[in-house]
Image 1 (cartoon, rainbow, N blue to C red):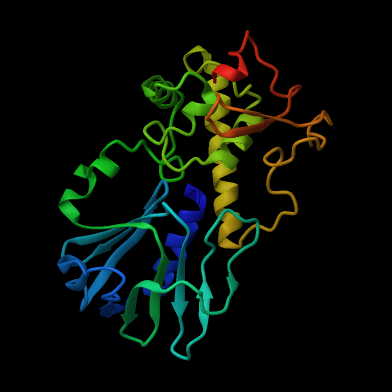
Image 2: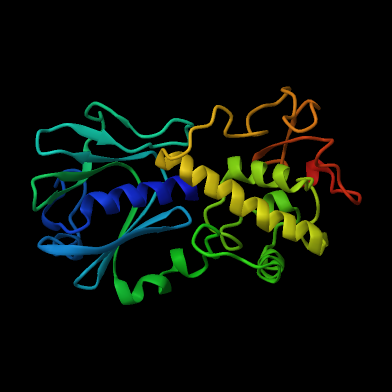
Length: 287
């Protein structure tokens, strides 16, 4: 689950919870020992639900926050008073949110609002309950880079962030959450293709024009993905290169190829013509 999808999920949950109080929080005793801070959120309003990268964050009025990260498959359901489930997407899929039946997995947290609706979290995400003032000092968040969907980064910001990465190539650096938060493998491929940057280009060797192209492409690709997951944008072809090995590039018609970022890295789809390297790129085996 990438940053744009988590941001769209945060928006839907915010719309559902806004103006309502969380009256009751149920946690199955045989599934998970209830945290004291978690149970004490009952009876309080949610000030804000937002995302940073792949983290979903709930801020409560009494100074407690929930943090949720999709380490494994998860699902969020909005249960109407009549019992109908509206399931949020649980994986990277091209379709918008759809009405679904009750999930098979047992709920991890069931939060009832003051109007009778319930917000149900199921699956096995990483879930933390922290005091809000200590939120960004937690090790999981302290090292996160900025979220391109939350703030516009300049060329100087991009250059600075890329130099922080220990990854040799731009394809691996974009996936480094300490550099930029929320970019997953699909959008890494799309950003590099839109910017015309070869995935094996050394991150520290990028010149100003390439960095400007990356910044522009990242903003456009991530915003388009976010609008798609919200359901505001319907496109038959959301991705130009991701998971399309052997198909013609929509820009030049050249067959899209796929290779791995290093021996144990992620697969990268790209167009060898649109993303021809300016200088000698690293060998793919050494990504």
